[in-house]
Image (cartoon, rainbow, N blue to C red; front, side):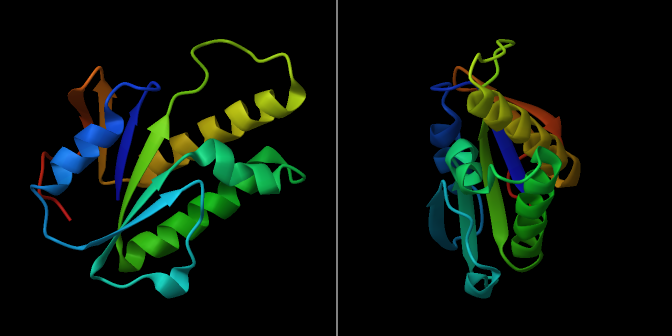
Length: 142
């Protein structure tokens, strides 16, 4: 699993598109704000996960740690079968939102991102289009 993280509009998606040109060709399924079903997973598929803020909204009635666990476990099950690339946007910027729901979304995304970074074989921070490898090897690792 790859985790690509950085601020909003810092070139993460462009970097992922560039990265995929160096990887084994697979069918790409873009999962913006959606959690795909594990039944969809095959070895010939690469899931691109993004918009975690949207993805967690239906689960806000649950405790944040439970939401994070549920989502990360599903992504890990996917990654056992398919290749998974998670595009994680830093939404905190050190600012604590006034609205309770916005705080919960920010905190839950942070918990999810921590767990994903721990489990990923490759973690890359993209800052204004420049990649910095934080964990793992350079391009081409499956």
